[in-house]
Image (cartoon, rainbow, N blue to C red; front, side, top):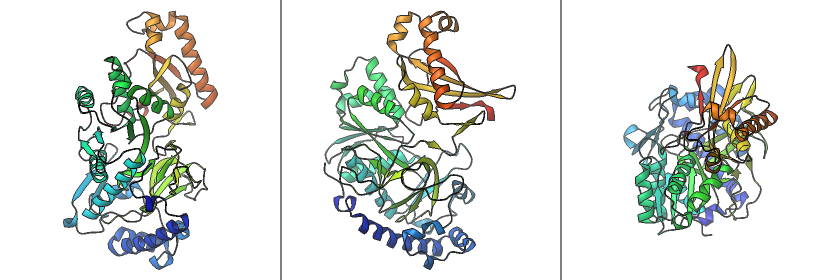
Length: 447
């Protein structure tokens, strides 16, 4: 399929490596000169810009952490005068001070470029209509996909998140070719179309570009079946640029291509910080090679994944990253075991009679951690039970439901080594996304 920037996207590895080295030398010198934080960090590590000659020298540089951004809130990491900024985004700040990111006009152009590249890799073409259901505002998703779509030559419908009834109406009336949304909200839309009896074949959508939260093949299958499209993953984070750091190609869907001419990626051991080889799961680290307002050196994302340099059948030469396996900061430690929500989802996907809508509730009773897994049963099973709700009495009395609960609990225990309480829920009773990121875990131990 056509590419947005074929010369850059298929650049031979040796030439790409040379370009990275040139840009790395430039960004290290730039940050040392313009950002006091980096000058102090480099000096403390005993590293001078002249010491960095190639990508192989990258491990000599110190890491940057999210805490550094918060400690220098709001503008302490700027490399340009504040009056040169044209846009500011920020995180919600739910776990502390907001993480502020700033852009010059050159950064905004870069942002649009990598998103346009990602949209094209996801199947988009100039002239297509993009239904953009990412939230607009301080969150980078909405405006990021908007400007990228326009840069590619698409017609962008800036729906934003939520107001599901309006989303359905506009999709049916405007007949967009592509939707951009969080995976959980795409699930919500698919479910609402099904409730209204809309055949997926009658929905105009051909492609979905989904991201902003971890998702699995189970969710992909559910969205594709429910909306009648081909879904690919877009990855990014506000601190680095926003969405568009990497993108799954629609041809292969075998990992997301990191746009390495702009973002230099590493995977390191979360505990030691030592670089890991291809295929090993660790913490994803990025160095921005072309950002102007707030460049970042060896930024630890907290995302756990792997990278591979194996050639991709699509012809793009940029390294691919695997799906996000979890985060270093949302890993649950339960009775000494490490648990990621996506592990539960992978288990549930292979169990009949349940659907991929679930929630984990972690609590502590008399000093002992407990995990409740709430998962919805299928409409077919619910109808077969013949109840309006799945009350405790019904769950205990119906042999099929008891067997299903026991089967799920046993598979989780055998796979992860953790005993959990399984609660079967009626269809539609587990919270859905309303356009933003879905809260899959409720951990009351810290409350």
